[in-house]
Amino acid sequence: MFHQLWLQRRLQSPLKIDNYESVKVFEQSLARYTTNYLHGDDAPLNTNTLVFNEGSANFNLFKLVPGGAYITHNPMLHLWKGVDIDSNILSIFTSQNNTKYRQCEEPINIGRPYNLFLLQMASTADLKQTVDALKYATEDKRFTVFKTHPATGDGTDFQKLWEAFKRNGLVSDYTELVDGSLEDLIDHADVVYSVDSACTFNAMLKHKPVFNYRVNEFSEIVPVVSTSKNHNISPISEPDLLRFLTWYYHYISININRFNYEQRIEQIVHQFNTGRTIREMFT
Image (tube, rainbow, N blue to C red; front, side):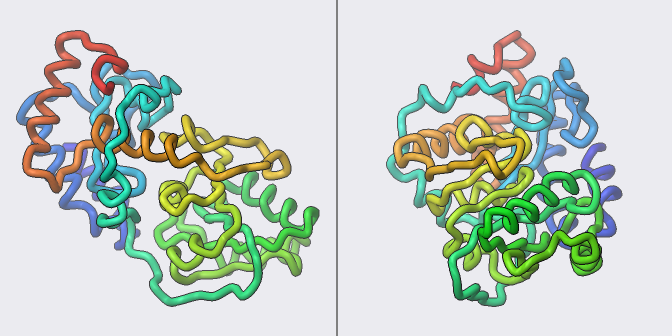
Protein backbone atom coordinates (compact mmCIF):
# COMPACT_ATOMS: atom_id res chain seq x y z
CA MET A 1 0.00 0.00 0.00
CA PHE A 2 1.09 3.59 -0.56
CA HIS A 3 1.42 4.37 3.13
CA GLN A 4 4.27 1.84 3.29
CA LEU A 5 6.07 3.55 0.40
CA TRP A 6 5.40 6.91 2.06
CA LEU A 7 7.18 5.68 5.18
CA GLN A 8 10.15 4.19 3.32
CA ARG A 9 10.79 7.44 1.47
CA ARG A 10 10.87 9.41 4.71
CA LEU A 11 12.90 7.12 6.99
CA GLN A 12 15.75 9.63 7.07
CA SER A 13 13.47 12.34 8.43
CA PRO A 14 12.08 11.50 11.90
CA LEU A 15 9.95 14.65 11.94
CA LYS A 16 8.14 13.45 8.84
CA ILE A 17 7.52 9.91 10.01
CA ASP A 18 5.84 11.28 13.13
CA ASN A 19 2.80 11.60 10.86
CA TYR A 20 2.91 8.10 9.41
CA GLU A 21 -0.08 6.75 11.34
CA SER A 22 -2.33 9.43 9.85
CA VAL A 23 -1.38 8.41 6.31
CA LYS A 24 -1.92 4.75 7.16
CA VAL A 25 -5.33 5.37 8.74
CA PHE A 26 -6.52 7.43 5.77
CA GLU A 27 -5.41 4.92 3.15
CA GLN A 28 -6.88 1.96 5.03
CA SER A 29 -10.20 3.79 5.13
CA LEU A 30 -9.97 4.71 1.44
CA ALA A 31 -9.18 1.11 0.46
CA ARG A 32 -12.53 -0.01 1.87
CA TYR A 33 -14.29 1.89 -0.92
CA THR A 34 -11.96 1.64 -3.93
CA THR A 35 -8.63 0.33 -5.16
CA ASN A 36 -8.50 2.88 -7.97
CA TYR A 37 -6.28 5.52 -6.36
CA LEU A 38 -2.71 6.82 -6.12
CA HIS A 39 -0.80 8.85 -3.55
CA GLY A 40 0.36 12.30 -4.59
CA ASP A 41 4.00 11.11 -4.53
CA ASP A 42 3.23 8.63 -7.32
CA ALA A 43 0.62 10.41 -9.41
CA PRO A 44 1.44 11.90 -12.83
CA LEU A 45 -0.23 15.15 -13.80
CA ASN A 46 -3.90 14.78 -14.71
CA THR A 47 -4.01 11.05 -14.14
CA ASN A 48 -7.40 9.46 -14.67
CA THR A 49 -7.81 8.23 -11.12
CA LEU A 50 -8.36 9.49 -7.59
CA VAL A 51 -5.29 10.87 -5.85
CA PHE A 52 -4.94 11.34 -2.11
CA ASN A 53 -2.47 13.37 -0.10
CA GLU A 54 -1.96 14.66 3.39
CA GLY A 55 -2.70 18.31 4.05
CA SER A 56 -0.05 20.91 3.26
CA ALA A 57 -0.29 23.01 6.39
CA ASN A 58 -2.53 20.98 8.66
CA PHE A 59 -1.40 17.40 8.07
CA ASN A 60 -4.73 15.88 9.09
CA LEU A 61 -6.68 17.76 6.40
CA PHE A 62 -6.30 15.15 3.67
CA LYS A 63 -7.41 15.57 0.06
CA LEU A 64 -8.93 12.97 -2.25
CA VAL A 65 -9.31 14.46 -5.71
CA PRO A 66 -9.72 13.26 -9.31
CA GLY A 67 -6.54 13.67 -11.33
CA GLY A 68 -4.56 15.08 -8.41
CA ALA A 69 -6.11 18.55 -8.59
CA TYR A 70 -4.84 20.73 -5.72
CA ILE A 71 -2.17 18.07 -5.07
CA THR A 72 -0.02 17.61 -8.20
CA HIS A 73 -1.32 20.79 -9.84
CA ASN A 74 -3.79 23.62 -9.30
CA PRO A 75 -6.64 23.73 -11.85
CA MET A 76 -7.26 27.39 -10.90
CA LEU A 77 -11.04 27.02 -10.92
CA HIS A 78 -11.56 29.49 -8.06
CA LEU A 79 -14.34 27.38 -6.61
CA TRP A 80 -13.90 29.11 -3.26
CA LYS A 81 -15.42 32.30 -4.61
CA GLY A 82 -18.88 30.75 -4.72
CA VAL A 83 -19.20 29.48 -1.14
CA ASP A 84 -20.86 31.11 1.86
CA ILE A 85 -18.48 32.12 4.64
CA ASP A 86 -18.46 30.06 7.82
CA SER A 87 -18.37 32.70 10.57
CA ASN A 88 -16.40 30.31 12.80
CA ILE A 89 -13.75 29.39 10.25
CA LEU A 90 -10.88 31.37 11.77
CA SER A 91 -11.44 29.87 15.20
CA ILE A 92 -11.57 26.40 13.63
CA PHE A 93 -8.07 26.87 12.25
CA THR A 94 -6.56 28.77 15.16
CA SER A 95 -7.63 25.94 17.47
CA GLN A 96 -5.69 23.40 15.38
CA ASN A 97 -2.03 22.67 14.74
CA ASN A 98 -1.31 24.15 11.32
CA THR A 99 2.26 22.95 10.84
CA LYS A 100 3.16 19.62 9.24
CA TYR A 101 6.22 18.99 11.42
CA ARG A 102 7.33 19.77 14.95
CA GLN A 103 8.90 23.21 14.82
CA CYS A 104 11.61 24.86 16.87
CA GLU A 105 9.82 26.68 19.68
CA GLU A 106 12.76 28.76 20.90
CA PRO A 107 11.61 32.39 21.12
CA ILE A 108 13.30 34.70 18.65
CA ASN A 109 13.32 38.47 18.34
CA ILE A 110 15.01 39.92 15.27
CA GLY A 111 14.93 43.43 16.66
CA ARG A 112 14.41 45.25 13.37
CA PRO A 113 11.91 45.23 10.47
CA TYR A 114 12.39 42.29 8.11
CA ASN A 115 10.99 40.16 5.34
CA LEU A 116 10.83 36.42 6.00
CA PHE A 117 11.91 33.81 3.45
CA LEU A 118 11.03 30.22 4.33
CA LEU A 119 13.77 27.89 3.12
CA GLN A 120 12.95 24.46 1.71
CA MET A 121 14.99 22.40 -0.77
CA ALA A 122 17.42 25.26 -1.12
CA SER A 123 20.38 23.25 -2.40
CA THR A 124 18.48 21.47 -5.18
CA ALA A 125 14.98 22.15 -6.53
CA ASP A 126 14.68 25.60 -4.93
CA LEU A 127 18.24 26.84 -5.46
CA LYS A 128 17.42 29.34 -8.22
CA GLN A 129 14.61 30.97 -6.25
CA THR A 130 16.64 31.04 -3.04
CA VAL A 131 19.45 32.84 -4.85
CA ASP A 132 16.91 35.27 -6.27
CA ALA A 133 15.67 36.06 -2.74
CA LEU A 134 19.24 36.58 -1.51
CA LYS A 135 20.06 38.92 -4.37
CA TYR A 136 16.84 40.87 -3.91
CA ALA A 137 17.52 41.43 -0.19
CA THR A 138 20.93 42.93 -0.90
CA GLU A 139 20.11 44.87 -4.06
CA ASP A 140 16.94 46.37 -2.59
CA LYS A 141 18.57 46.87 0.83
CA ARG A 142 15.66 45.03 2.43
CA PHE A 143 16.74 43.06 5.47
CA THR A 144 15.55 39.48 5.02
CA VAL A 145 15.56 36.58 7.45
CA PHE A 146 16.03 33.12 5.92
CA LYS A 147 14.34 30.52 8.12
CA THR A 148 15.73 26.98 8.09
CA HIS A 149 13.36 24.08 7.42
CA PRO A 150 12.97 21.39 10.12
CA ALA A 151 12.59 18.49 7.66
CA THR A 152 13.71 19.51 4.19
CA GLY A 153 12.97 17.06 1.41
CA ASP A 154 16.49 17.06 -0.04
CA GLY A 155 18.42 16.89 3.24
CA THR A 156 19.94 20.35 2.83
CA ASP A 157 22.57 21.24 5.44
CA PHE A 158 21.67 24.90 5.80
CA GLN A 159 24.85 25.92 7.60
CA LYS A 160 27.04 24.44 4.86
CA LEU A 161 24.85 25.95 2.18
CA TRP A 162 25.03 29.37 3.84
CA GLU A 163 28.82 29.16 3.85
CA ALA A 164 28.72 28.36 0.13
CA PHE A 165 26.47 31.37 -0.42
CA LYS A 166 29.00 33.50 1.47
CA ARG A 167 31.85 32.29 -0.73
CA ASN A 168 29.81 33.29 -3.77
CA GLY A 169 29.04 36.78 -2.47
CA LEU A 170 25.34 36.15 -1.88
CA VAL A 171 25.32 36.86 1.87
CA SER A 172 25.38 40.46 3.02
CA ASP A 173 24.40 42.74 5.89
CA TYR A 174 20.84 42.41 4.61
CA THR A 175 20.60 38.62 4.91
CA GLU A 176 20.54 36.42 8.00
CA LEU A 177 20.10 32.67 8.48
CA VAL A 178 18.02 31.80 11.54
CA ASP A 179 16.22 29.05 13.36
CA GLY A 180 13.64 29.75 16.04
CA SER A 181 9.93 29.95 16.62
CA LEU A 182 8.08 29.98 13.30
CA GLU A 183 5.15 31.71 14.99
CA ASP A 184 7.37 34.50 16.34
CA LEU A 185 9.04 34.99 12.97
CA ILE A 186 5.76 35.23 11.05
CA ASP A 187 4.16 37.44 13.70
CA HIS A 188 6.76 40.19 13.26
CA ALA A 189 7.56 39.87 9.54
CA ASP A 190 6.51 42.55 7.09
CA VAL A 191 6.26 40.09 4.18
CA VAL A 192 6.45 36.28 4.13
CA TYR A 193 7.50 34.35 1.04
CA SER A 194 8.96 31.08 -0.16
CA VAL A 195 9.13 28.82 -3.17
CA ASP A 196 5.93 27.04 -2.14
CA SER A 197 6.11 26.41 1.61
CA ALA A 198 3.06 25.05 3.42
CA CYS A 199 3.76 27.82 5.94
CA THR A 200 2.26 30.15 3.37
CA PHE A 201 -0.93 29.06 5.09
CA ASN A 202 0.32 30.26 8.50
CA ALA A 203 1.12 33.65 7.02
CA MET A 204 -2.36 33.85 5.51
CA LEU A 205 -3.94 33.11 8.89
CA LYS A 206 -1.94 35.96 10.41
CA HIS A 207 -3.03 38.38 7.65
CA LYS A 208 0.52 38.85 6.36
CA PRO A 209 1.39 39.88 2.80
CA VAL A 210 2.53 36.58 1.31
CA PHE A 211 3.64 35.25 -2.08
CA ASN A 212 5.26 32.20 -3.65
CA TYR A 213 7.57 31.48 -6.57
CA ARG A 214 5.81 28.25 -7.56
CA VAL A 215 2.14 27.38 -8.13
CA ASN A 216 0.63 25.35 -5.29
CA GLU A 217 -2.78 24.69 -3.77
CA PHE A 218 -3.00 28.23 -2.38
CA SER A 219 -2.19 29.97 -5.67
CA GLU A 220 -5.79 30.98 -6.38
CA ILE A 221 -5.48 33.47 -3.55
CA VAL A 222 -1.72 33.83 -2.93
CA PRO A 223 0.26 35.61 -5.69
CA VAL A 224 2.92 33.69 -7.63
CA VAL A 225 5.88 35.71 -8.94
CA SER A 226 8.90 34.79 -11.06
CA THR A 227 11.26 37.03 -9.09
CA SER A 228 10.95 38.83 -5.78
CA LYS A 229 11.78 42.07 -7.59
CA ASN A 230 8.28 41.94 -9.05
CA HIS A 231 6.44 41.77 -5.78
CA ASN A 232 4.20 44.51 -4.46
CA ILE A 233 2.01 42.43 -2.20
CA SER A 234 -0.88 43.45 0.04
CA PRO A 235 -2.51 41.21 2.63
CA ILE A 236 -5.41 39.12 1.37
CA SER A 237 -8.70 40.88 2.08
CA GLU A 238 -10.66 39.60 5.05
CA PRO A 239 -13.71 38.45 3.04
CA ASP A 240 -11.53 36.63 0.50
CA LEU A 241 -9.49 34.96 3.22
CA LEU A 242 -12.56 33.76 5.12
CA ARG A 243 -14.24 32.52 1.96
CA PHE A 244 -11.13 30.62 0.85
CA LEU A 245 -10.62 29.09 4.30
CA THR A 246 -14.27 28.03 4.37
CA TRP A 247 -13.93 26.27 1.03
CA TYR A 248 -10.56 24.77 1.95
CA TYR A 249 -11.85 23.26 5.17
CA HIS A 250 -15.42 22.26 4.31
CA TYR A 251 -15.15 21.36 0.63
CA ILE A 252 -11.69 20.23 -0.49
CA SER A 253 -10.32 18.83 2.79
CA ILE A 254 -11.16 15.67 4.72
CA ASN A 255 -10.38 16.06 8.41
CA ILE A 256 -9.51 12.60 9.70
CA ASN A 257 -9.98 13.87 13.26
CA ARG A 258 -13.71 14.26 12.61
CA PHE A 259 -16.05 11.37 13.33
CA ASN A 260 -17.59 11.37 9.84
CA TYR A 261 -14.44 11.52 7.71
CA GLU A 262 -15.06 8.05 6.23
CA GLN A 263 -18.47 9.17 4.98
CA ARG A 264 -16.74 11.97 3.09
CA ILE A 265 -14.30 9.48 1.53
CA GLU A 266 -17.20 7.25 0.47
CA GLN A 267 -19.04 10.24 -0.99
CA ILE A 268 -16.05 11.36 -3.10
CA VAL A 269 -15.42 7.84 -4.38
CA HIS A 270 -19.09 7.53 -5.40
CA GLN A 271 -19.07 10.91 -7.13
CA PHE A 272 -15.91 10.03 -9.04
CA ASN A 273 -17.31 6.66 -10.11
CA THR A 274 -20.48 8.30 -11.40
CA GLY A 275 -18.62 10.83 -13.53
CA ARG A 276 -19.00 14.00 -11.45
CA THR A 277 -16.60 16.82 -12.32
CA ILE A 278 -14.26 18.57 -9.89
CA ARG A 279 -16.49 21.62 -10.02
CA GLU A 280 -19.52 19.52 -9.11
CA MET A 281 -17.73 17.66 -6.35
CA PHE A 282 -16.15 20.55 -4.50
CA THR A 283 -18.69 23.37 -4.52
